[in-house]
Image 1 (cartoon, helix red, strand yellow):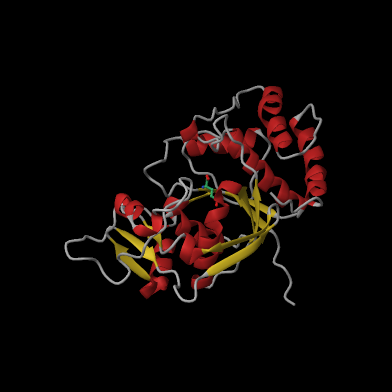
Image 2: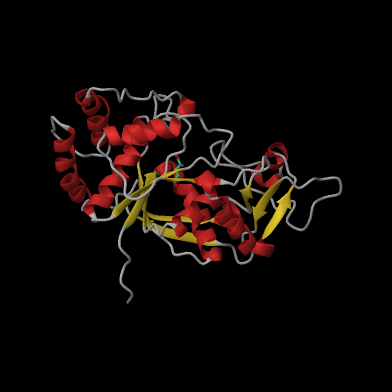
Length: 303
Ligand code: GLU
């Protein structure tokens, strides 16, 4: 048996706005998990989606993390500085990649998507897999997913337990370079996690259905598979994930640490199921690390 490599975790926010309670929950969980395992905790700014970046949000997020007492190991990385790595991965994928000229509308209207529930992301029907139809222009790049047999991937999520997805039937060939020429999240995240030697990914459960796409890319790129823990996500009153888009309110990370503790850190910890009493940020972390270790004993939890 090979020894498990030393724990390296990460928090990977997209700089689409300031940290809010929802993203703070993911940050705290990933930080605590790294601390409990005496590991490193890296911060990577996922600014690959140029259409959604907000200027200055990266620095704002970093400042909030510092104010909360979450100090990262090593240098912060920005995905926009890592394009050559993504380019190399694209070349490595070789013949598995093909150009796609389909619009969202065409995909949504295709036969395979007629009976889907409104919450299910559209499945790619494979239209451009064997070449572009005459008159079509290849805009995005997709990676082929095996068709027969189907590519079925599963993993043991440390929080939610067994998770399985038939990538062929439920997702189809997926985008790695977007029509607007930005690198897609799925490719960038896998390349970065691999290059940074991430062993443990702790993030919101809203990303759990992306995980099989990432497992697949790891397989074809010959990268090791990290372990995953998806934490519940904070929902707003409409049942949507709290995010900048759904109007999540950034917490005030101003000069008063007491307020930061009371209005953001303690509620975020409570949301994770950590019962912590603390009057200072230092005391918060002293209590939170053993509380997280204890919470881990109760996992996985079936939904
Ligand atoms: N950048 C993603 C977000 O802010 C997180 C990606 C990940 O943790 O894999 O939602």
